[in-house]
Length: 181
Image (cartoon, rainbow, N blue to C red):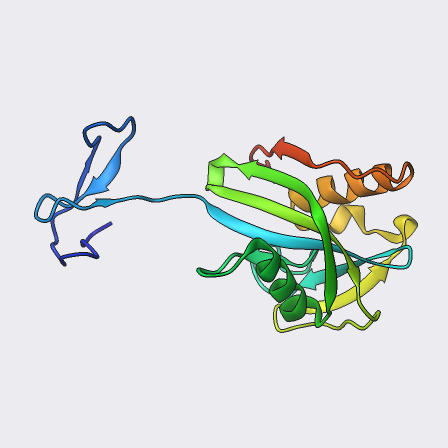
């Protein structure tokens, strides 16, 4: 951080403010503490009949890999609204949301992923601006070796396992950095 967004000062200290337990960017001129908090990613595991809707990314990171519709939550947006918006933007699909299904903590990149289970309203979908392709996949056809992120792999794995029993508990996991060597 180079400038204070409150007063415009070019003097920012990285210090532990009184009553705090970690380093923060603090403006010595106006005293404001600039908090940096994790980013929230909202997404959906959309299902039509027995198939799962996946999108092939046309943007980095992981361009060309398959993912569930998901993206950063916007200010003033609920988790549900963000998940629905991302599904419209990436897969040109309308979805009915069910319960929260998976929550992943990625502390190494300051992100929290939250996926809902969902049902496509009418079976219509397509490739949005951030997708090169979109498709409905049966369990046997999921491109496991071409999934974009560990959160997608984990969510799909949990879903296929839970679907056999018809019970979908909320799953929470910490995701460690991937070594793509």
